[in-house]
Picture 1 (tube, rainbow, N blue to C red):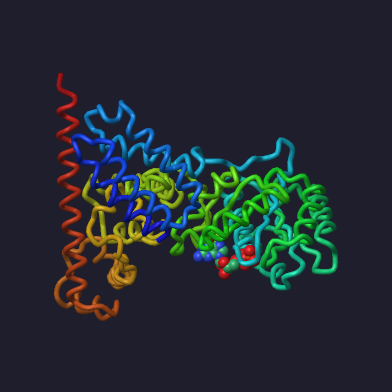
Picture 2: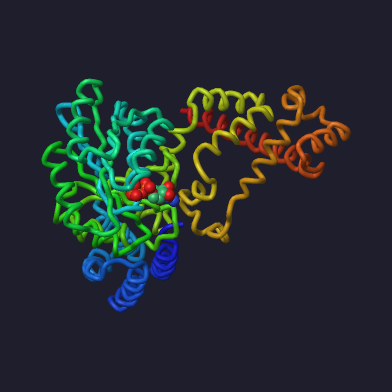
Length: 444
Ligand code: GDP
C-alpha cells in the first residue's frame, strides 16, 4: 500500500505522545525529530519537510496546546491539519466551462499513465457528472497510443476522435473541436503526446494545442512511484505550459508518498485525482483531509461511505434491512450481500479505511483471503433453492453433496452454516436491543 512506511512511523511517533497528560517543549522537539526522519524517508521534498516541521513545532508549543487537558491529542490534530494543508487543504473539483464544451488537456511523460487516465476520467465524467465526453487521440508519435485509446473508448463506450499519425496534433485537436460541436459532446479530453524526458519540441507542440483549444483544465499526469522526479516534472511542465492540476497515478502501488506530499507546495497546483489501479473505474478524487486521516491511521469513513453508495443498490439494502428485522434472511441474501461487498474493491483496502483498523494486529499484512470468499460463494451456489431458504434441512447427505458440488469439504460447508446461524443470532440481538432502545426513548 502507498504511504505504508510513513504511516507506520508517524503513527508510532504520535502514539507515544497521545496519551501523555503533560507535554513540554522537549517532548515536541523529540517528536518532531522523528516526524522529520519519517518524512525524509518517505521521499518528501526537503524544503517541504523543513517548513512542515517548523509550522507544526510552532503550533504545538503554543500555550493553548500545552495548557490544554489533552495536549497529546491536540498535537496529533495539528499534525493532521498540517498534513492536510500540505496536500492542498480542500478537495479541488474539475472546472467546467460555462459554455460547452469543457476542454481538458492531458499532458505528461510517457508511461506516466496518461492514456489510461484519459479513459478513467471519461468514466468519472460520465458516471458522476452525467457528461458526454469525446476523447481525442493526439499522441501521433507512440504508434500504439491511438489504438490504445480507441480500445479504451470501446470498452467504456465513449467516442474517440482520431486521424491516424499523418496529421499534426494541432490539426487533430482543431478538427476534434469541430467534431465535438457537431456531435454535442460537452467535454473534450485531449490525450497529447508524451516523451521520455521533458523536451523543447514537445513543449512547443503542447503550447500550440493549448493556444488553439483554450483548455479549461490542463492535467499533468505523473507517476507517484517516481517520487521527487514526479515533483520536478510537475515543476517543469507548469513553468513551460502552465498546468491547472495534477493526476497522481499508481497510488495503489508501493509508493512512499513523497510526490503526493510535495507536489502541492512545490508547484502550488492541486492534486485533483489519484489513480488507484489499471482498471477504468480506478480514478478517485483526491481529498487531502481524507488522505491525511488515512496516513495517520484514523480511517477514511467518508470514502468508505461513498464507495458503498456507489456500489450498493439502495433498494436492495432496504429490502435486506427488512429481511433482517423479520428474521427472513436466507443464504441467498447472504450471497447477495457478499457480492455487493466485493464490488467495492479489494477487501483489505476497504478494511484499512475503517477507523482504528491500524490498531488491529496483523491487518497490515493481512491479505483478506478472496479465495475463501469464492469458496463460500461456491458452497451456496451448490445448494438447492430450498436449502438456501431453510438451511435447517441440510442433513449429512446433503452436506456431502454440497461439498462435492462446490469442490470444497464438509468442514467448509459446516463452517459456513455455523457462521450464518451466528450472524442471524447477532442480528436478532441487535434488533432486540434497538427495539428496547426505541421503547425507552418514547417514555416520558
Ligand atoms: P502513457 O504513456 O502516459 O499514456 O501511459 P499509459 O496510460 O499507457 O500507462 C502506462 C502503464 O501504467 C499501463 O500499463 C497502465 O495500465 C499503468 N497505469 C496507469 N495508471 C495506473 C494506476 O493508477 N495504477 C496502476 N497500478 N497502473 C497504472
